[in-house]
Image 1 (cartoon, helix red, strand yellow):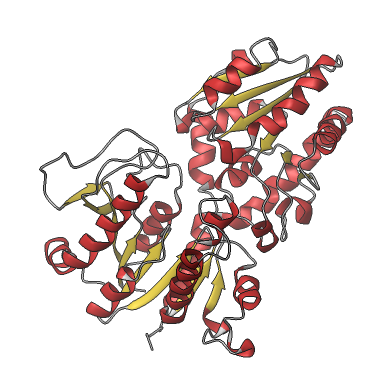
Image 2 (image 1 turned 90 degrees about the horizontal axis):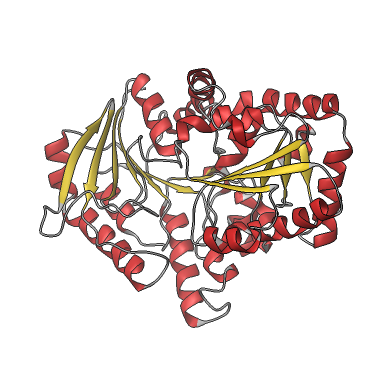
Length: 421
C-alpha cells in the first residue's frame, strides 16, 4: 500500500520521549509498507516540562526522528487539566487548519489519508483538513471524550455544555469515513447513544472498527537483554514481588491498592511492592506509607529498562479508576508490557472484553473495595510459583497477537481501496 498519511495527535511525542507509542509504532510499520507518513503534534510535551518551540518561535517546525517525520505545531505551556490546556488545544486546532497547506508543501507529504487521534475536545479541524486535500478521514478513539470528562467530574452530566460536546462528538463520527476504537466495545457505545442507523442515527456500523493498543515485542525483548537486572536490588528472592509501572496520579487510584497491600503486610505476609513512575500523587503516597519498608517508590526510570524490571517481579499491578465506561472495554498501554513480561497481572479494573479473563492471565477484581483487593492479593500470595508462572505464560502467548506489526496490518486492510463519502 502506497499512501501519504497524516497522523494528527496533539499529544504525540518523539520516540525518545513517548510512552504512548501507538502512533510512532504504527507509523514505522506503515513506512515499511511503502507509505509516506507525517505525524503532526503539539510542541508542548504532555505531562513534561518541555516545549519544543520557544516563545517567539515559528508556528511549526519539521523534525526527523530516524524514519519518523514530525511537524510540531506551536502551542502554549500548560500543566494539569485547566484553562491553559484547553487554550493549547484551541491553538493546536487553529494552527492545524491555518498551516496545513504549508506543512504539506514543506514536508512534501500531501495526505491521501488523515488519521485524527486523541482529541480531548471534539473539534472539527482534522475533518476540515482532510477535505482540504480530498483525503480519507479516519477518526481514532482511545478515550471516550467527552464521556470521560463527565465521568471524572470535569463536566456536569446533563448540562448544556455536556450536550454541546456530545453533539460535536456525534458529528465527528458521522463525518468520519472510518472510525477506529482501541476499546472493543466502541460499536456498543455508538448503539447505546442511539447514533447508529438502526436506532435512527446516521452512523453506519460497517465503518466502525476495533484495533487495540499493543506492543513492539522485538523492542521489548531486545531491551530486556540489553539492560538485564536493572534495579535488581529492589527485589527479593525470599518474598513475592509486586510491581507497578506507570503514572502516580489521582486517576490511577494507586492509593486504593496501597491501603490494602499495607494491611496485608501488617498481617505478617511476606511481599514487596515496587512502584515505578512519577506524578502529582507520588510525594503524598510516599509520605503516607513511609513507615512500611515493603512499599518502595523508585520514581521515574528510563523506559528502556522497564522490560528487565518487570521480568524480575512475580506479579504486575494495574490500577485505574473504575467508571461506567469500562463496560465498553479498555486498552491500557501498560497491560501489554505486563503481558509481554510473562508475569500474572492483578488488575483493579473490571471491564468488559477483559483480556486477562479471556486468557486466564491474571485477576481482575469485581470492584475496588478494600475487601476485594485484599482477597486478590492473598489469592496471589497463596498461589505456588509454578501456578503464577503458568498464568504469566498464558499472558505472553496472548500478547503475541497484539504486536504492532499485526495491528498495523489491520489498519492497512481498512485503508486499502477506501474512499471518502
